[in-house]
Amino acid sequence: MRGMQESSQTILRDIFGYNHFRGEQDAIVSHVVAGGDALVLMPTGGGKSLCYQIPALVRARRGMGAAIVVSPLIALMQDQVDALKQLGVSAAFLNSSLDAATARAVEERWFDGELELLYVAPERLTTPRFIAQMERAKVSLFAIDEAHCVSQWGHDFRPEYRALSILHQRFPSVPRIALTATADARTRAEIVEQLELEGARQFISSFDRPNIFYQVVAKNNGQQQLLQFLSGYKSQAGIVYRLSRKNVDDTAAFLVGHGIRALPYHAGLDASVRAKNQQAFLREEGVVMVATIAFGMGIDKPNVRFVAHMESPKSMEGYYQETGRAGRDGQPAVGWLCFGLGDAVSLKRMVEQGDATDQRKAVEFGKIDALLQFCELASCRRQALLHYFGENLAAPCGNCDNCCTPPQTWDATEPARMALSVVYRTGQRFGATHLIDILRGVSTEKVIQFRHDQLPTFGVGKVYSAMQWKSMFRQLVASGLLLPNETEGQLFSGLMLAESSRAVLKGEQAVVMRQEGLPKGRSRSVRDELESGSGKIRASSSGSRTVADMAGIAEEDAPIWQRLRETRMDIARAQGVPPYVIFHDSTLREMLAIKPTTLAAMAQISGVGSRKLAQYGTQFLDVFQQP
Image (cartoon, rainbow, N blue to C red; front, side):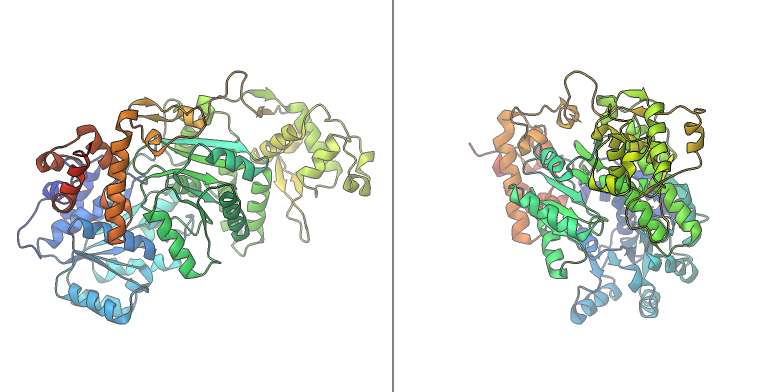
């Protein structure tokens, strides 16, 4: 262990390779180094880890002991520890992946004062044995990562997190820092209450991720829509979320069949297969992970270029956190959501059939409704997303689908009354597909079976296409005029009238909807709209772009860029770590811009600390010497 005391600024520069703190990082670090408690809300990619890693190093090098970092996932611990070791930091983890002998060796290093950071799961930390060990060893700091897991109102509730209140009770003099990227006001209040952080200083950064382009499309043959979307991201890393294990397997196989390197991830797979697939995603380039939401918490891969949802997430919090796994490097990325009415009905049915309390169900219904309204709105999506988290964006963002290709709106009062009427006349127990057949006058076997071709509403909506009716039913559900029919014994996705629909049926309330499709004129793709620091990124004539194109690399620099990436990959494979643990793309991009010829010049590049300069500097300098 180093005997000298080092300042946070020195550690930032010499260890992490950065000359300046970002945003409130400096204030947070100073507060925690001085022994203060903190609650930190900072968007994914905003640099949360530095907010506890630097105080941990400062305090450890002042002889105060190791920082204990509470982390919810084994993969996340491994990732963080690998990255710290690359920087020359003495870090380790204790979890179920270690055999008894290895775990004992880690504990001995801790007791001997050799560790600066020790990562543990909440289940281990709250055991009597581990508490006794903490009382034996020196502990400089408690960092509670993914702190929203403590809240029963959050989207990733982990009951074991609620036992972490014991930290303040047993170690009142040790500072605590709780960190999360996703927490509304209710969740923040519960974090403070459950972790006994009433006296902690709160640091709340903007939730805005300006580099992410938000896009929602109406579902119409979802897998083909996904395939079309992915055609613009050849050899790019991304995540595709599906709700069910079967859909994960089917979609992964579908993409593989179309030449895309896609891997499945869900709890039904053997643990060794899940681990292998996750390692491939983290350590190789161009892998598309098709997964349930079991995959993703804390994933640090910075160059994920897209997150695609094939069904609606359960909440705005879930949507924000999951899309936030894209573009952690600050470069253009896309959050793409393929939304259908069945998503809303299925989600609400899952809540209703669950064993939660009525109060909890009411909260979950509210979260689903907020997400539906986000999907169907005709105004700026970023403004709505930030407003949900209590943040005001004064002007439209200019970087979402509604800003770039504003949807048309129209007076849909008449067809809305038709839709509400057919729901009522069919007994409020049929789904949208059957109701649309009635409205369009389609004599299906089911329509005839129930004599619905005899209804006054049969055929009254022929003027509208099936796709237009699907959009209208989605918007009626999103606006709360229609609700899922949760009658006991209901076997299909029925719809029923909400109390608020009375005013529409009586002609006392108008209904305005967004019109399906884009305004007249050229339809610009998401790829056309993405912006980098150097301006618009244009789609190629083929509709797909190279890795260099996506990174905004000039054509003449593309060969050097490729050699930089290959050098990084060779080093990463030799060490069995993800490429971004060696250097982030942003560091390679700065190398390319500067084209250093000496180690002194290389040392000035952001992300090149003293340890990495000594280990890798010469290899990357050699890239610029090649013809």
